[in-house]
Length: 524
Image (cartoon, rainbow, N blue to C red; front, side, top):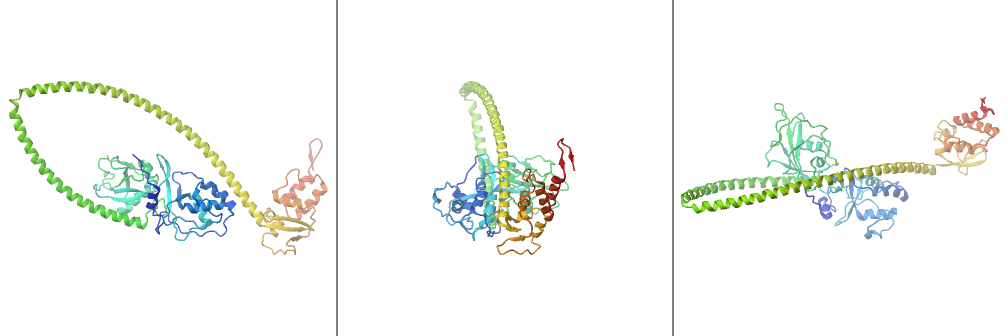
């Protein structure tokens, strides 16, 4: 089937960008966050999301290209659009999804869209326009147009149908739910769907309700009109009413019926109104066409009867002439001889054609084998790329975790005065050990007064407090960081017990009371 691609201007007209309208995927207008990250942080998050490739089943949102280029200029992301290079490096403001008389739009992946909406919000009067990616034969592309499905009952006459628009990625279970709702089928009755991609295709049962209808039927165009017929199971006869020309079968569909579309609201009020008008016009046209056709059939029968009378009269005349036409017989024999010669020629060409057909089949099989080999190589390459992407994702998440800790440390600095020694640390480090005295002091449960210089005074020897602080920062004492001095260990043990750092105290006790002899024996 030939695939047709609608120009971008027609796609914009289809979605009516630039007018006040309801759109698919309608969401409540978000309020922009007052705590948006710094531009450098935004860039590190958004830059990779803007480079996402189209993948079947992903959702993308329409955004005005001018707004997106303003954002890139503000965040310092390179752009290939030459018409927007002079944008000021200032915040772009709320997101614009439409602009009167605008013919240039871009698309954002759902992850990027949600992130940007949480930061900037939507401009007043602008609505989210949610589109889905479909895997056409030519590759994955954003589906700009919903296909018009002809839906009917399996027992309906050819002219009794309804036009309903669905995405090619729509699940079969939702389409069946819609048809049941359209024909007011009771919940107690079982149903199943039969479908075909177009009028010339064969009916096939739709048993996988979780699969997309476009993939089940192999639809590859936005302008194909698939046909869907619903068969209702009779309590008396069972599954005995498939579409005309299809053998009955007892195969049962599996999977749930989906009340909701893959979009939040795939059918809008204006689309329903247009569909109703088109349906009414279609019914009127069919009624007029049926009346005209009945008159045409009646006149055709009269004409055929008249022509048959003329033919019978001519036949009688030919029989009368046959007795006096000996020459005609000779001519017919000559024609028969020539026809035999032409028949022999045709048989020769038929053999040549058969030979050529076998040769083409052999070439076709060789090409199929080559394509399968290339497909295996491509699959292997894609698996490697997937592994690399997962590794990059893990690195990115680890980087975000570390950045989050750095922000917490920077925003919670605390100055300590330990016996006259000044120390600066973070709330995160002081509360690292929840059982310690320092964690209890700075947990917020106690009112601790600050000194005039903003520090907190603790009346302890500050000589060895740096070891205490490093223990809290690192989560433990690393090997080789303490001097080999028993006096220092004893003093530090006293401080650890005062601050109720139990693990550090146990470690120092092990250093002080467990010694190793020159022969390698350990004694206490």
